[in-house]
Length: 256
Image (tube, rainbow, N blue to C red; front, side, top):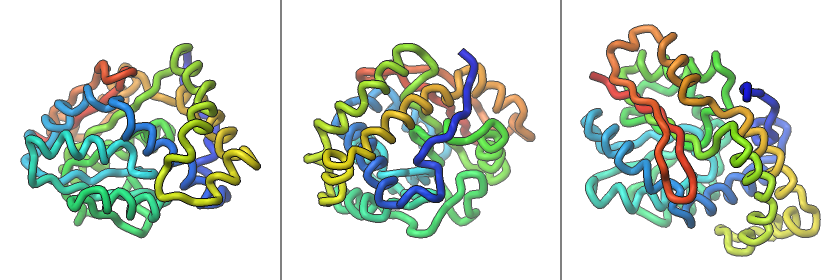
């Protein structure tokens, strides 16, 4: 099916930050409690090795994604690993919670635009479940900025434009209702806006379906790379990998 770039509530400036945080907190909890990123550990390790770095600059971190789980796996072979969390809408309480889980996490409190990353942030750039938020022109700008900065980049998407992926998103409100009491840090507002006024599960449902419709295919990711200036200075790898209960689409670009 063709890519459809409908709006997501999470992207809207007018959405109250606490509602956005409740949504990204759910995504973080789910990705840390399931082995959905198991299959991409070798891809990230390859990116770190080929980039000769032990630092990850995570862009569009949301609530921290599955980085708590991934961090434990990556540190087995990279004990000196450092991870810097950034976002255009920083979820500071979630970042602080993530930092408490491991001493190698840091975060930036101010907005960071993945299309124009400050030059002083050096390391392997990563994006988890966030490339689909960007229209093709902006998605290509993210990649071009990495190339222009001579920074390796690894991008991962946990959903696809497929019937199966959309159906999984349709059932996501049930997951929200079942997991909300266990999400940390605890906020009474999360309970109110999940059960009494069910805004969070409704927005998760909409954004989840739209995320599937927005996701770039392998061919479309390859097309983004093909239009980059100086792309020959990087090694590019685009594909799909079985990972836990799902398949992950990924793009890895490492400087030569």
